[in-house]
Length: 104
Image 1 (cartoon, rainbow, N blue to C red):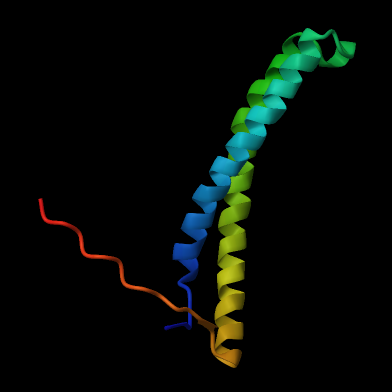
Image 2: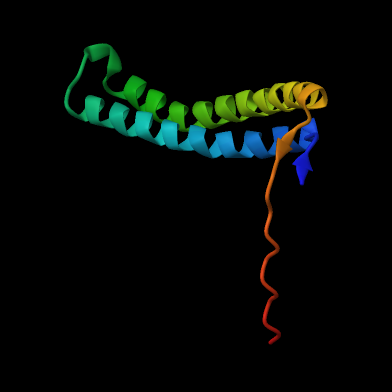
C-alpha cells in the first residue's frame, strides 16, 4: 500500500490532541518546579501568590498553547506531505492483516 495523501484537518485534530497532552505534562513539570522554588524561598518576586499563579497558570497555559501549535503544525505538515507525495509518490507501507477476533 502507498500512503498518497493525508487529510489535513484529520491530521491537525490528532496532533492538536496529542500536543494538548504534551503541554499538560510540560505544564505539570513547570508547576512542580514553581512550587519547589516558591517553597524553598526563592527570589522574592517569585514567592507567594505570584509563584502560585505561575504554577497554576502553566497547567492551563501550556496545554492550550501546545494544542494550538500542534493543530496548526498538523495542518501545515500534512499539506506539505500531500504536495511532496504528489511529486514523488508517497510512502510505501507494508501492512499485515490483523488476526481474526475470537467469537465470544
